[in-house]
Length: 238
Image (tube, rainbow, N blue to C red; front, side, top):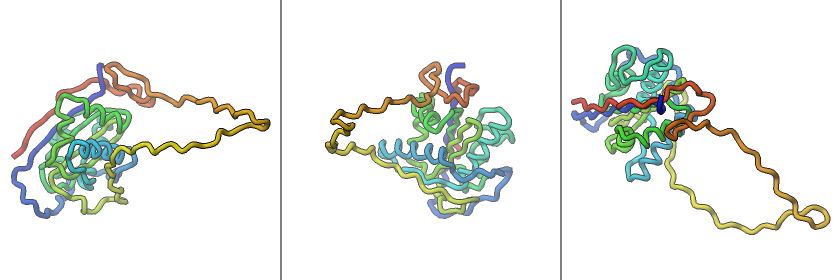
C-alpha cells in the first residue's frame, strides 16, 4: 500500500435561515467519547490556525458534530471499513442529523493516521478536496472523533456550539500567530571550581517516527495501519 488513507465529503445546505434551530433527537448515535480529548483538540487547533492564516474564521467545537464524529470513528474502527457511508447505510449528512445536528449543511474529512498532526498533514497535502474542505468559509463549527487510528472531522454551517455536551465541555482551541523569538539575554558561562568552563551535557535522542513511502510517517505504535489514498466523495445536497 502506498500512503495513509483519506476521504473527504462536503455538503451545502441551501435552505438557510440563520436563526436558532433545535437539536434533532438522537438515532443510532450512542457514544461515550463525545467530548474532545487532547489529541482531538489538537486537530481542531491545527485546522483553525490554518484557517486563520488563510483569512478564514476559526471553527467553534460543536457538541453534536463531535458526537457524530466520535460515533463514526468508533464504528469504522470496530467494523473495519473506511467510507463516508457508515455501517447502517447512512451518508455523512444523515448521520450528523441522527446525532443531533440541526441541518444537513455539513462536510466530512476522514483519515487513517497515527496522530492529529499526521491527519492534518494528509488533508493539507491532498489534491482531492480535503484542503479546500478545511478552508470553506461557510463552515462555522466542527466536531472531531478518533478511534483506533481512524479520524473523523465533521464541519457544519449552523452554530450549535452553545448546546450542551454529554460530558464536560472542552475549552475552545485558540488559533494563535506564530510566536517570535525574544531577543537573547547574555548570561554568564557556568564554571567548575578552579575557573574551568563546565562542559555542556551530552544531548540524547528522543523516539522518532518510522518514515514511510511517499514522505508520510506513522508512529511505531501503529505499524499496521493501511497506507493508500482513496478518491473523496464530494457532493452537495439541496
